[in-house]
Length: 527
Image (tube, rainbow, N blue to C red; front, side, top):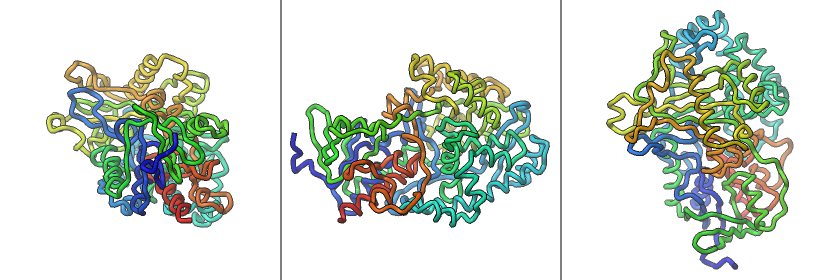
């Protein structure tokens, strides 16, 4: 079929995730004719809010749930009306060997934070080391984050901006475990820091690939401070604003339409009630690199044969009638759950979990971290739920690679992971978590596990990889010539660019991949 004039665009964007909407908004605001094609009935991808339980008025951020990497520049450029709230408590970490004590990091009370470190670790100086570590990383965040919406700098340029060669080498050339062992004396505190390197990433502290280092870097540079914020209204509010900005700028958004092939010359074939072809001078891919490769192969292009990605997490969503009581009576549940609640995440436990999963076993105990969106933003709950004292809870399990459930019964595997996550959290609670879980009108408990298999099937994320593939360093080894290379969005085909999490600076809910692709596209189209 030949593309008709009515289906010709400057840019065709495949996939309607948040990055695709960012690209569409920028391009449409620049006067380009752009269309977004999404296979689902709604846009947003993983950045959505949903009601998982019938008859329950709670809109949960079902997949992604916090915002750190979304630059203020993108918010300002696109006129987004978003409220991101900072959490007072950064984290709470009970001691797995004695859950009656734990470390509470209170950003408003340094003395209370120091006291909790001393009480839990037995070392008053460990709080000073923790604060010093944050201070040492601060220049990295300030140096790297502003470059994320600019053409890629070189590694030498970033190194010079950081101004700490010893730290630079520790972060970029040696496994993260070395830096953590030299920075802290406590296995528990080392684990608190290491978790930032393992979100959605299957690695040990000493993994020679440095996958954990790259993940760690992305987690500590957000906003130039490393803070993680709660989006008021849930992740769906972020998507809604991006969709509004794109539509108001003139972008066309088509949902419920599946792309079946992409040709290197810009033809995007879709399958609905009848086949259609959307032709773009450029095609931007908001889907994962592995999905793009399949679509290009279907369009007659040669493939690279790259390894398929593998996610390494399970996400548990739940609605509680109230927060559970802790075994640590010195900390209120409201304080513990409003930040990131780390359970069974010493560095030794995290490495042991990696070893167990590498051997085909679900880690025991499963390292998990928990947060409560509704403590910071109660608007996601209906009036009756808020009045009753109900709270949402998100539990994120680490070191569970897709291979653990890839060849098994998905329902049974999900049930096993859910049981492992509940057992892990129960180990530090003064009462069973199950006793606090609300029941829906149909009698079912308001709790669900979203595994890598679920992400693959519902969001088309191959291997359930939330980053669409391994994260990359956000810089170049040497200056690049082409716009696509300078912005980190190149593919082997000149007319096809990456605009999603597979872009060089993609990953998380940031919009950076979308902004980078739009800037590269405008340079190319301008020529």
